[in-house]
Length: 283
Image (cartoon, rainbow, N blue to C red; front, side, top):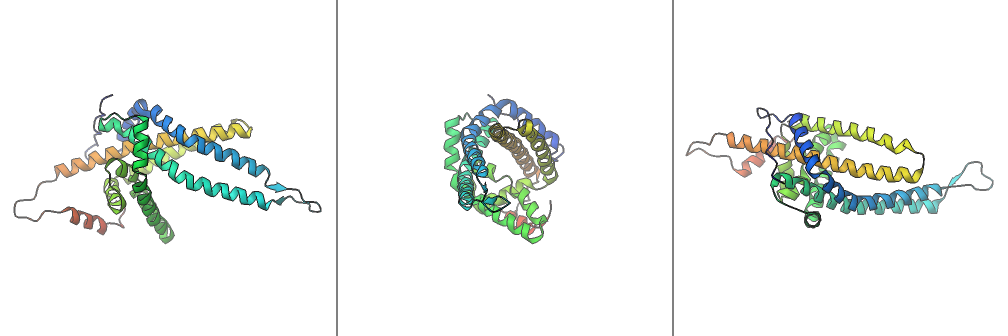
């Protein structure tokens, strides 16, 4: 399948319609292969934890002779806490690999290359270390921002939301990846907020399907499948947003007049310093 055409922001402004059009095109071309990767990696993890958690919760409360109210079984509670901790650690690795692989398959529609499931998974493991280092660094800054005044943390959350694309496509990690994500997001915050709101609404309405039946096992399966579907949709939409923001930034840089000979030109280091100086601004 051919390379997807470059998104065309309107007069330098990246509106929601551009992202929506690109997302629809990507859904047609790459949804099922991305969903397959997500289902292969994420479904076993979520189903296993879902059934283990449900089983432990059923045995959590026990009747104690002489007491009117059921009491918490401390052994079962310890098992539940251990299961949750293991799930968090394993999820950090498995979800990261899955997200990178799914995103890279979707991005191939823009890059014009041909990448299969095996190659995508290989790239997921290849970029895992760089991604984890970068995402943990971003998470630390976001948490500090939330502790400070909440709003700075939310701004940083959006500012660093292109990390997975920057690490896996541009092969930049660490502080440089944070700066690159910030540059791509500059001027696109309101579009990002609208995309997030739309997907939050879709996710909220999709959860209604979980309660169609009262059978716990079916609820667990339904919840897990919905999670994979929403993850796939979110990655597709955000990858479309990334390329739209990237092409917008490239057009802006291309249209910037070159400085006359003899004038000092802004270096990459000076660009970084300028962005650092605007760190607190809501673009």
